[in-house]
Image 1 (tube, rainbow, N blue to C red):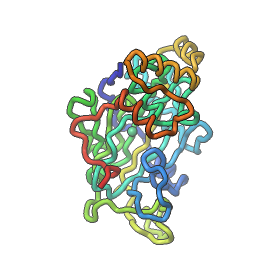
Image 2 (image 1 turned 60 degrees about the vertical axis):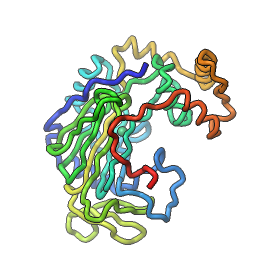
Image 3 (image 1 turned 180 degrees about the vertical axis):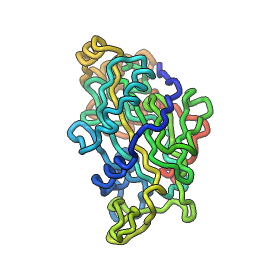
Length: 320
Ligand SMILES: [Fe+2]
């Protein structure tokens, strides 16, 4: 039903001139703390955010100058073809994560799925994830390749991943990460960021208003400024910088045409779930008027549970 992927492909010496990436980082500063899916409704003035900063460089309506360095990277694109045995690779997203001082890991997770006609612009995230784990929508699922590139080696900062499925122990990419990339299936394979140094003060928390940018003091370092005060400052190479690339994957153009013509509407999704729920003898149905109702969400998710990977490390987002 759910297909766990092969191990990702490791590439070395990925970017010829890492200085180009530094300039990209500088031009697109500042960076803001991770929000959204993991942190709904965060209080903007409470220091609740770890120093995990993020910015988009490419998405549907955006392509920052210089991002082609990643978007159209030849070896990464070829690795995606090789990984999937596919000929059509449509890169669509590039974004960057910058982290420091995370005493615990990031969450162990698979990346959010998309389906023909259904994505987070028109469908609640819990429903997209339940569609994935139900295995009922494999035909319309958009296969997405992911590349993660690391700029430097920092204290900690491992990439933990479960290439043999969530019931087998994870592997780690750690040390010797500078200018390497892993290309594979982060939508099918669980993965997790390990703790990131420095570790002298635990996880340092900032408010969602904090910004990371080149320091104003002429030192050449990068600083985290939160409501007017510098909270942390270090050379860029002490921050864990990773650049993510995502592409849609189709076996060939005929498959791309066939799949793109087969778009799911919300009533389609409900009909497919309801037929399966009936076959399972479950009483709940996907009531389209109750898609925000936590009771309904819990009932449906209990029937199509997500896997929980073995040996996952405690996350900064776990309840304290
Ligand atoms: Fe991820």
